[in-house]
Image 1: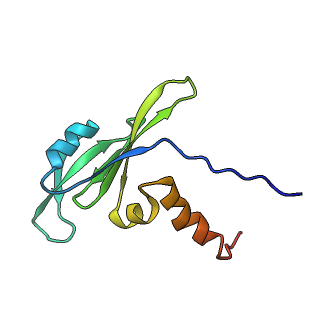
Image 2: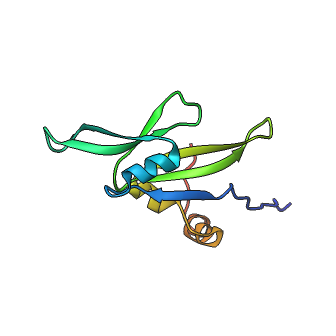
Length: 120
Protein backbone atom coordinates (compact mmCIF):
# COMPACT_ATOMS: atom_id res chain seq x y z
CA UNK A 1 0.00 0.00 0.00
CA UNK A 2 1.29 3.45 -0.90
CA UNK A 3 0.84 6.25 1.61
CA UNK A 4 -0.69 9.35 0.02
CA UNK A 5 1.08 12.55 1.04
CA UNK A 6 0.15 16.15 0.25
CA UNK A 7 1.77 19.51 0.89
CA UNK A 8 -0.11 22.24 2.72
CA UNK A 9 1.09 25.74 3.47
CA UNK A 10 0.40 28.16 6.30
CA UNK A 11 -0.85 31.61 5.51
CA UNK A 12 1.81 33.91 4.06
CA UNK A 13 3.85 36.08 6.40
CA UNK A 14 4.76 39.71 6.03
CA UNK A 15 8.38 40.27 6.99
CA UNK A 16 10.35 43.30 8.16
CA UNK A 17 14.07 43.37 8.81
CA UNK A 18 14.88 45.63 11.76
CA UNK A 19 17.63 48.19 11.18
CA UNK A 20 18.96 51.02 13.31
CA UNK A 21 17.28 53.42 10.86
CA UNK A 22 13.75 51.95 10.91
CA UNK A 23 13.18 51.23 14.62
CA UNK A 24 10.34 53.75 15.09
CA UNK A 25 8.58 52.77 11.87
CA UNK A 26 8.82 49.07 12.75
CA UNK A 27 7.47 49.73 16.25
CA UNK A 28 4.45 51.51 14.78
CA UNK A 29 3.93 48.65 12.28
CA UNK A 30 3.79 45.94 14.95
CA UNK A 31 2.13 47.88 17.75
CA UNK A 32 5.27 47.86 19.85
CA UNK A 33 7.64 50.58 20.98
CA UNK A 34 11.30 51.52 20.77
CA UNK A 35 13.23 50.90 23.96
CA UNK A 36 16.84 50.74 25.09
CA UNK A 37 18.89 48.40 27.23
CA UNK A 38 22.49 48.30 28.33
CA UNK A 39 24.63 46.63 25.68
CA UNK A 40 25.77 43.09 26.41
CA UNK A 41 28.84 43.66 24.24
CA UNK A 42 29.94 47.18 25.18
CA UNK A 43 29.59 48.07 28.86
CA UNK A 44 28.06 51.51 29.38
CA UNK A 45 26.53 51.72 25.88
CA UNK A 46 22.76 51.73 25.35
CA UNK A 47 21.37 49.58 22.51
CA UNK A 48 17.99 50.36 20.96
CA UNK A 49 15.50 47.66 20.01
CA UNK A 50 11.83 47.21 19.18
CA UNK A 51 9.62 45.79 21.91
CA UNK A 52 7.21 43.46 20.05
CA UNK A 53 3.96 42.36 21.71
CA UNK A 54 3.16 38.65 21.66
CA UNK A 55 -0.22 37.20 20.61
CA UNK A 56 -1.55 36.70 24.13
CA UNK A 57 0.03 39.86 25.47
CA UNK A 58 1.64 38.02 28.37
CA UNK A 59 5.23 38.28 27.17
CA UNK A 60 7.40 40.39 24.91
CA UNK A 61 9.99 39.81 22.26
CA UNK A 62 12.97 42.04 21.69
CA UNK A 63 13.92 42.78 18.07
CA UNK A 64 17.37 44.29 17.70
CA UNK A 65 18.78 45.61 14.41
CA UNK A 66 19.59 42.70 12.11
CA UNK A 67 16.66 40.61 13.36
CA UNK A 68 13.42 39.86 11.49
CA UNK A 69 9.80 40.29 12.58
CA UNK A 70 7.06 38.29 10.90
CA UNK A 71 3.38 39.21 10.82
CA UNK A 72 0.91 36.40 10.15
CA UNK A 73 -2.87 36.32 9.99
CA UNK A 74 -4.26 33.21 11.67
CA UNK A 75 -7.82 31.98 12.00
CA UNK A 76 -8.78 31.11 15.57
CA UNK A 77 -10.99 28.26 16.71
CA UNK A 78 -13.81 30.83 16.90
CA UNK A 79 -13.19 31.58 13.19
CA UNK A 80 -11.79 35.05 13.91
CA UNK A 81 -8.77 36.44 12.09
CA UNK A 82 -5.99 37.41 14.46
CA UNK A 83 -2.64 39.05 13.76
CA UNK A 84 0.42 37.47 15.38
CA UNK A 85 4.01 38.69 15.39
CA UNK A 86 7.18 36.69 15.95
CA UNK A 87 10.84 37.72 16.18
CA UNK A 88 13.69 35.72 14.65
CA UNK A 89 17.45 36.01 14.61
CA UNK A 90 18.92 36.50 11.15
CA UNK A 91 20.62 33.09 10.96
CA UNK A 92 17.44 31.17 11.84
CA UNK A 93 15.22 33.29 9.59
CA UNK A 94 17.45 32.98 6.53
CA UNK A 95 17.65 29.18 6.90
CA UNK A 96 13.93 28.59 7.46
CA UNK A 97 11.94 31.22 5.55
CA UNK A 98 11.59 31.23 1.76
CA UNK A 99 10.09 33.59 -0.78
CA UNK A 100 8.01 30.88 -2.50
CA UNK A 101 6.56 27.44 -1.75
CA UNK A 102 8.74 25.99 -4.53
CA UNK A 103 11.91 27.32 -2.92
CA UNK A 104 10.82 25.96 0.46
CA UNK A 105 10.19 22.49 -0.95
CA UNK A 106 13.45 22.48 -2.88
CA UNK A 107 15.59 23.69 0.02
CA UNK A 108 14.03 21.55 2.75
CA UNK A 109 11.95 18.58 1.60
CA UNK A 110 14.00 17.73 -1.49
CA UNK A 111 17.28 17.89 0.41
CA UNK A 112 15.75 16.30 3.51
CA UNK A 113 14.51 13.29 1.56
CA UNK A 114 18.04 12.50 0.36
CA UNK A 115 19.45 12.37 3.90
CA UNK A 116 18.71 9.85 6.58
CA UNK A 117 16.89 11.49 9.46
CA UNK A 118 17.41 10.13 12.96
CA UNK A 119 14.28 9.44 14.97
CA UNK A 120 14.26 9.01 18.75
